[in-house]
Image 1 (cartoon, helix red, strand yellow):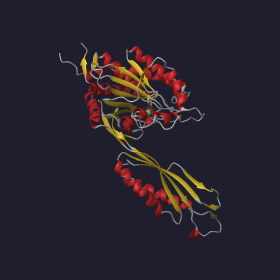
Image 2: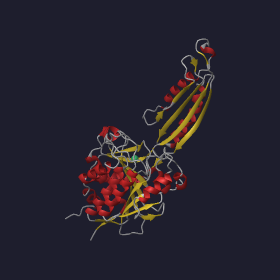
Image 3: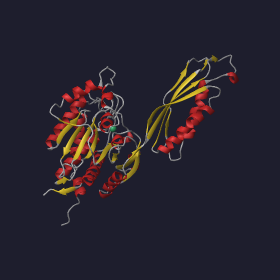
Image 4: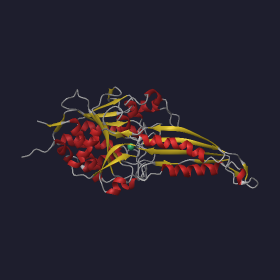
Length: 423
Ligand SMILES: [Zn+2]
């Protein structure tokens, strides 16, 4: 009789009902009346979710540990315990009016993959660990993706812990209470060597659902730049000042936005260009506007395109200033992430081996994986969500799609960790 390949055996042991049941159970922690969750970072609901994860891990015989940044790790020991582990996971915190799947799915898909690997009678060579990163959302304490950034040496923990929420509570105070909720957890140093990192996540966009494909093979995360544009004209009487003599900040700003929108348009519809704030002052019906302030958010997966488009912003604004003064200030810059070709290929081959239609895509949203990509080979697996809706209490996904994502994850983890059939 031919032996089933280990990765196929692991994927075959993924249990759709078990994964869905845990997602629904976790969704009860911080549940909102509209079916979503409010489980903000380092809150008592977040701590409760963490305790639940530790309890599930203990049921499976996994070793739970945590670091001083509040990151939680659940370890399935490999046959070579000294080798750097393969890590998978996501986050348990949510937006104030968030959904049951954003983040929680990646953590629970990881747990499901480990349970499936055990159920298939496999022992990975490298240890495989599931992580729940602290404060990915950044809604209570800014910025987000704090736990993964600190782990990867991209942010300083002490600086992050000084940040306060809207009630004046520091992240450090909240973290102390959070860690006290699991007093017996063994402590890990922040940051340790990893063989690879793979994160499963709902797409948070409409493309997989629209194309009927259950698996997104994520090649990277697009970069982002923010600008603030201030246009200074001159206030004047709307009834007496001839148009030719005005310095109308609004007309200039409107021309700038129109020209920028044209310059940013691309045939492939890849550039994301948004003017989300537009303030006019003094804001009087019979006064020519003296000042306009507007913001630019634009995103693209290719750093060279981001540079090229950035270089056009100031000249376009100057060309349409119409006698006004204009000042452009860059306020944010997140470079694009390119995931590791070998990890991307492993995800693609796992989907192929399981006969699951897959699609290559770039993530529009930021994820913890962007920080992990700085320290180890990293990648992501996307699954469809209903209508592409996320950061919303109505966020939903199909049990079947979620299980398919966990199958691809289990196969990918086995490929990356190596495995023997337990004797
Ligand atoms: Zn997320």
